[in-house]
Amino acid sequence: MRLFKTFMTALTAVTMFSAGSALAAGGDGSTFKVNEGYAFTGGQILTANGLNFTWTSELTMTGTDTFTEIGSFYVTNFQTGVLPGSDALNKEYRLVGQFQASGSAQVFNTPIGPMSYGVFDTFHLDLGLSYDLGPSGSSNPSIEKLLGTGELVKGDALITPGLISKGDWQAILNFTANTEGEKYFIEPKPFVLELTLAGVITDLSDGNLFTGPLDKTGSGDAYVTDVPEPASLALLGFGLIGLGLSRRRRS
Image (cartoon, rainbow, N blue to C red; front, side, top):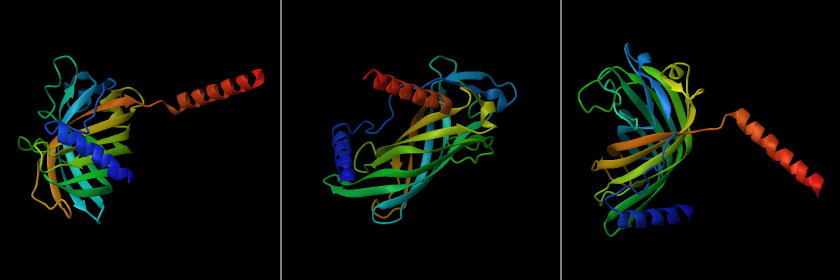
């Protein structure tokens, strides 16, 4: 029932704003620093608050209301807020991601054709460097240096084949850089952040939405927000406990 209500809300939004993104990420991201000198000799240090990417995936229905999805993306540019950005990205190296996801979905027949609303139950991301520049527009480079991984906090997706906008998706992940990743993502330290990925579906294959498989491609953007360190959370907890004891004594 909750899934149906959420879908109907999303459906109403898409019907009203069919040219836009119903689930797009919003808000300003926290700034972070990237040391491109780790990726190639002579690289610069960049300060960014987000990034843009191109992605592709294949979705398969594994039951009447469950699915799996595998995909990949490469970063097209950093959102630096000021020019210049990175002139080396996709010329000297690539920043690429590979993901696997699963979840539950409902497909509905509507007057403008079938639509699907789904909720991610799992979403695993590997993010790393690739030196396989490949042909222009290629979005499937393999990861040669793993920089970190992300795991799902929450996420959902909407597929609307009959509309101008074919749908969109969002996944919020807890991302942690590994030892190599700390050499590329140099601030904040440790590089443990909440990573929000938001993609817009620009093209769909002719696969059956009820049975799949369904090939999807699109573009997207991402931003990060700080996650309090465990020590900070512990201090906050002790502070709340102390406040409670103080109030109890006064009463």
